[in-house]
Image (cartoon, rainbow, N blue to C red; front, side, top):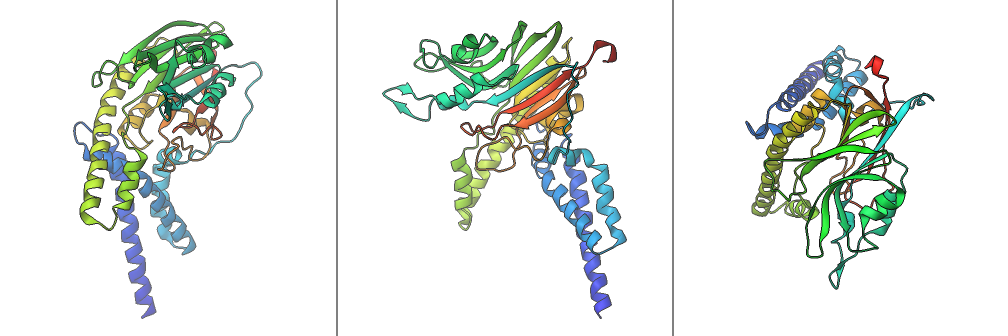
Length: 377
């Protein structure tokens, strides 16, 4: 009788493991599907990390059971290793060659330096600690999204506080966005000269939208690198939206209302970002120089947006980082929605997330790139 029970149990676990593998395959397939063609694919791809983790747990289970059926989850793990690497990066520190030419790039969504978190008599209280942290960081290039500067304010003129007083060059893609004539948008600061710059305005966003991309050709001691700072369509999900959904559990009608609201926002974001990333890549592919593409992509590594970038470029966290590398400083844990990608002619040597800077709703990310000699590109 016990033998029969063991066979039934093993068959059930095998069926469940097979379903998880099929879930993995479906998730990988859905990452290739443009959400504008079939938006439910975005939600299936979004669930892929769950399938990857369950498959790994099944592998542990079959190993502990000393069963030959471990072949199923092990084969799935090997064949999908690239996706596991997106989930958790495993790299070992190496020294940068002494003779190498390097470029350190920081990307940071500054959340408008918290300018609108508190207003006293119409004067925004900007987080000067965050401004000074950015200004004094030794990175070579800074790609700042949701940048904020009040040109007529000595204290809050961030063009000056971060750039001019430290001798940095800049390319700004901003709009004058409030009643006190503050500049809002994307800014690239560089300690190296900027030869040329430009803005990519996405066709599915208003002219003054913060969702855009800026690029700058940076002269790194005789070699030019094109750096893109990107801010794709936001998920438009606030912490209270998530809290409302959690609190509605148990109230069927309220939960349906809140969960549908979240689903609609996610769907709109999937579709908008898919269109925007194609415009971005069309521009990237025309670059005559090695490229770094970094910023707030507002999408996880298991999305159509990320996957399209990964087809063309390498990801710095995957190649040189460690762990999950979460960048969202909010109520949803483990989200890596800020990234740095790079193309041929560069090699990511180190990558880190600055968790000590927790004043924004994003954490800064920093990568060191080695410029490869032209004769080996």
